[in-house]
Amino acid sequence: MDFRAAAAAIEDDLIALRREIHRFPEVGLDLPKTQAAVLAALDGLPLEITLGETSTSVTALLRGGKPGPVVLLRADMDALPVTEENDAEYVSRHVGTMHACGHDMHTAGLVGAVRLLAARQADLTGDVVFMFQPGEEGGDGAKHMIAEGVLDAAGRRADAAYGLHVMSDRLPRGIVTTRPGPMMAAIAGLSVNVVGKGGHGSRPHTTLDPIPVAAEIVTALQTLVTRRFSVFEPIVITVGTFHAGTRHNIIPDSARFEASVRTFSEEALAQVEAESVRLAEGIAAAHGLTAEVAFVREDPATVNDPAEAAFVAATAKDLFGEDRYVEMADPATGSEDFSRVLEAVPGSYMFYGASVQDDPHEAASNHSPRAAFDDSVLADGAALLAELAVRRMARG
Image (tube, rainbow, N blue to C red):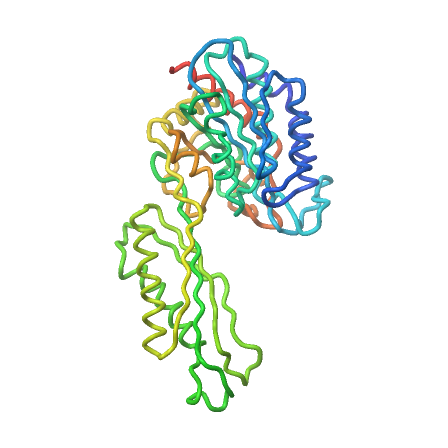
């Protein structure tokens, strides 16, 4: 099956769909316009379609002409609360919302894979589940879809799952990369509210000042990483917010900060949880204050099945040539809720270069208001997803 040639024949349609979705980005679990665009693009194809009940997800099932394995292919559809600063003619029409992470590319690419595979339905030796997911950017959309049965949409559990994520920087255009084992980090949120006793800034000795205590906890969290964990166990703790006070001469009653925590193992995450809570409470107590601490787990680590990652690498090389695949040296410290699919089904996630710059290191990164993605990679991305499905079904 020459999927590259077939994908090139529908490239204009995929670009048009991607740009339509880009113009009208939506955030979170409720994406009615995006869902409508996907359903219109799938209309008339031999699919069994199920819509989400707790989100605007779309699950499309293509039953092959012959029995065989079930393969799941996934695209996330949601945008980010970012104001776009690009000047393309298809720039976001929704002020304050932008497809800054390329999910419009993912959605159009998966529609392309659906069309490629549907055209060869009779020859397929298995079934394909297409997972169009809202709410990847903090909405835990994968969890919603799994609870509603996406992994068993074919009537039995999927045998393998694959997802592709475009990169606006770092990777040269058209390059595919993945790795066995940990691919992306687990993420949790740490919230600390230090409670003291406020008063006049001229008489700090009559108060219990929460600001220096909260600042001490922030610094101690960085020391925690370097002194309680092996240098070979990657841990990232980033304090993203710090709020206290109303005027320079008033000591407030409390000081609050929030941090993100990223690890690559369950053991490390559990240790960070236990020790960060103890550290915050202990430092506050040492100064006569209290700390209200919440540690909330979000996405688990994205861990590729080694055999499936090797399969992705071999398929990309066969389809595009040896020079279009690069082994990913280290895991990425970003997080991804496709991890929930990979906890239940062996599979592999992959990155795909879509930079508009010849030197991707000069390009704006994903999540930037200037992030831009090259439409020329869409057809090959659709072809790769279709090829993975066919080859995986053929393996039995």
